[in-house]
Structures are given as structure tokens and as C-alpha cells.
Image (cartoon, rainbow, N blue to C red):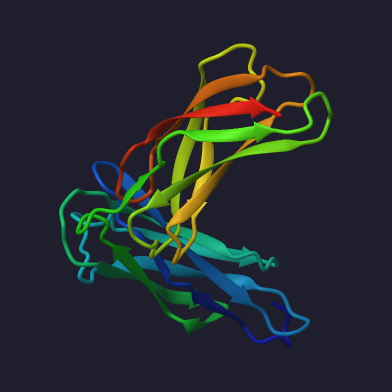
Length: 234
């Protein structure tokens, strides 16, 4: 900050996500953004701490205290609060993350709200539907092709739901790009997501099969997490 510059403005975002089912924690990540005056730079710091709401530490989340600072840059800083996953049906809950004690900064949004969405009542369920068939067209060419496998959840997503997937070969040679840890995202308001598996170019078997398996959903539980996918050459 130069002598003629006003302090930069600093504000914290809100964040909404599912609590998670079972054990472990879910990371709730809040952005702390800085906005300097025109022609000026951001130099300063601000303290950040969590505060109980209907969600309370340590049972629902881990209390967090930190300091974020800038020295000429404007990239936002992140503050991550671990939220405790459980399998208890309960109401949605919330806590706050508060900015205090600014140095060479002016707070314009002091409080970020963390909305902890319950995914146990009714349970959020994600799975695949039965067997799948993918067609490999123009066999022997170098054209890029993709096998798309759709997944569904029983309720529209209230926050983005991520689900990991992998493929397990049943036949050889393998005419697709194996996946050890892929990621599918079901966006807010949707009940569907799609996994894309790249088919390899060149000659391929007339028919091959692999297991498509879901694991580690960010919300709720898995329902029918495995299916057999058949690739047919055409």
C-alpha cells in the first residue's frame, strides 16, 4: 500500500456442502478475497476464526483459527474447516467463519456462513442402472471415441456431489483407457452425472467387457455401485 492508497477491502464467502455419511471429515473451504483500490496493491492481514451456530465444535466441526495475509498480490486466500461426517438423520445445520483484527485492510463482509446439509434423512443414494452397452464405431480409424456411463442419484443435488469411479478389465486385450480413480460430478439441481472412458484407436475386439465401479461419494451412500459395461465394435 502506498501513502496515497486507501486500505484494500477484504471479504469472506459463504460455503454450502453435504455433511457426509459414515466416518471421517469433509473439507468446507471458504474464500477470503481482497480488493485493492484502483492503482493500488493489497498489503495487510486479517485473522479468521470459526464460531458455533446450530452446528457446534467439536462434535459437528473442528474449530479453526488462522491468519491470512497479502503482500502486493490479489489472489484470494482459502480457509478450510473440517466438518465431521456421521450417519445420524438430523436437520441441516450451520456455523460461521468470522474475520477480525484487520491490519491495513477494511472488512466489507465479516461473516461467512457454512451450511452443513444433511444427507441421511432421507438418505442420498447414488448408483448405476443395470448393464451398459457402448458402440465403438469406425473400427480401425484414429478417431477419438468415448464410452459414456451415466449415474443417478435419488434426490436432486443441493450441493455438487462428487463420486469416484474405476474400471476393472474382464477381457483382454483392453481396447479402452483404464481408469483407476476418475471423478464424476452431479451439479446442483441435477440427479445425473456422466463418466467418460476413452476408447483406444485402431483395431479392437468385436466385443469386450469391463466392470464399472463407483466409490467414495461426497454425500450419502452408494446404491448399485457396480455394473458390467460391454463395448461392441461396429
